[in-house]
Amino acid sequence: MESATPTTFAVNLPVTAPPPRIRSPLPFERAPLAELIRTDGLFQAEEVACALELIDAALADPDGDYRVRVAECDGRVAGYVCFGPTPMARGTFDLYWIATHPQLRARGCGSALVAAMESELRREGARLIRVETSALDGYGAARRFYARHHYREAARLRDFYRPGDDLLVMTKRL
Image (cartoon, rainbow, N blue to C red):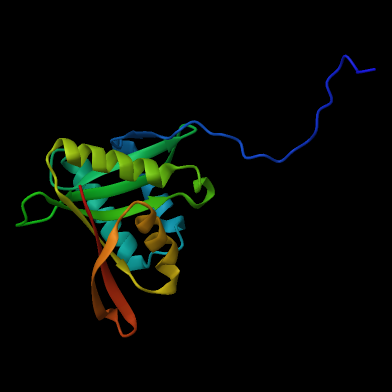
């Protein structure tokens, strides 16, 4: 005879989180963006300073060449992307920075940011997106992320950053 009360089991299944909301940053979100960049664990001090410089430029002039979009999850900044037109190139854009908060990774924030950026650029008639990254092992996850989103290695400059640290240029045609 079956029980009228269903049996339940404790199973550790991943919780499906709502998709991140992608939007322009608000001026007061510089501090959470700075914290996100600093806690990434991959960026050196000069890289953090450069990323913040571009965020400051985007916040100061939202219609300027540097654009920032944030991914909001659970009411907080979970990630961001910074991109803009490549100087002296028609229809080509640079993806300068992308990062997600270490505690909020694997929730689709990075993918949502890339998709939103690409959608925005397609609407504007962009034809190519370029991203530069390091060939060091520590950047392997970033390279795999770009590859999953169909960015392909277009060039490699040996010993660019320092001896043994090649610059990889990855591109995606829109």
